[in-house]
Length: 207
Figure 1 (tube, rainbow, N blue to C red):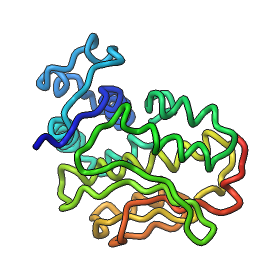
Figure 2: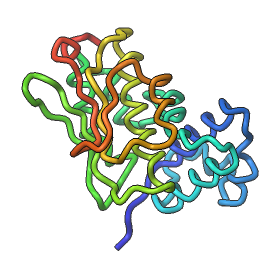
Figure 3: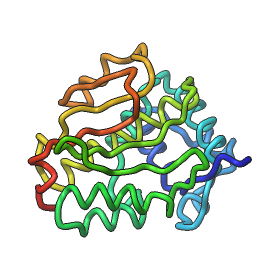
């Protein structure tokens, strides 16, 4: 069974993150057959296993296992395709997250599942599906998704206090001290899901 594929726009995010690390990814992209024409195509896709191997190669070159956290910082709503555009046109943050999760399959198709937004005890939960077991090839994927969702909350609303906590399924990694530099909220490891917990008052923040 095929795992799935994603838009090459996520490769472009990876390239921006590598450049932010002052590490050129161009040779690696060439090795994976990714050129400017492919990266500029709105319909081009890359298989998820290949994307994970690409990320691992970039981590090895840059010696930055927190590549995914930087990818999230470099992500714009436009990088998410229709899901991002729908989030930008939403009335408030709650509807923006619902849109990002609902329309995710248009740019990211995974046999393992789909992201979801739901309410729990007044909090908004934006949950990324499990891709366990976790290893050096896929930790950056979860980092990048939750980091992008975290940063987009501020970008969409201009508010700093949107997120109550960020939850990761995997155990605390060796680079865990870096999470404090990327997130100004509580970070929880070894949790039952990968998710952002959005403050009740933030759900009504206008876009």
